Length: 222
Ligand code: AMP
Image (cartoon, rainbow, N blue to C red):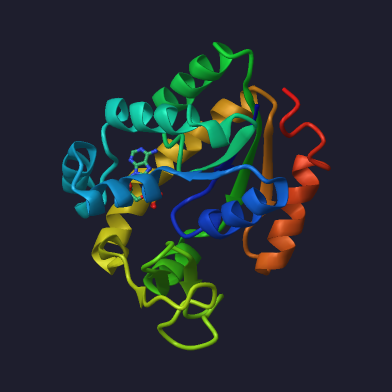
């Protein structure tokens, strides 16, 4: 299987790019944030546990997060691989992923870091809107929908996430940037890291990611 990890702070554009790459390479977009939000909506035990942390902008404990992610990767549609968005968020998660993939003779093929300065992250996160039906992301400044408040792709209503409020944004960023750095280092040492300038227009970032992955001939072969 081919596992591609997208790395970047909240607001770097991981969700937008992961959705694009999933379509381009025909493998699922696996976002731990989306998995948690749907667990919260369903009121499942994982959702009830995760909610307390998510509302405060804190990371959900590794034990719960890793179990949920590995469960998702074991589903049939991920047999050829996956684009991971929002996981791993710290070194223990990166190591747990390596161990689980190694058991299947696999590994992370590419870790793609999307780099964006902090001031820009705060600006983007406070302008972020998400669609109710599928979680398609929009941004007031950088990627507005054609009709305000309505998703271009499925017509559902757009909303702002509770954890995209300015105070929570600052907590999330300060907590997450240092562990993101650990994860970047983890993949740099394994020689699978490529860093992309996330300040460029969305299409150019997509092109740079595709160039870093290559033609995708490896996708599904391992
Ligand atoms: P995201 O949509 O990736 O920004 O994630 C939203 C929230 O879900 C985060 O603020 C965390 O509370 C939780 N979450 C998502 N991914 C992880 C992860 N890999 N480890 C721990 N918590 C996570």
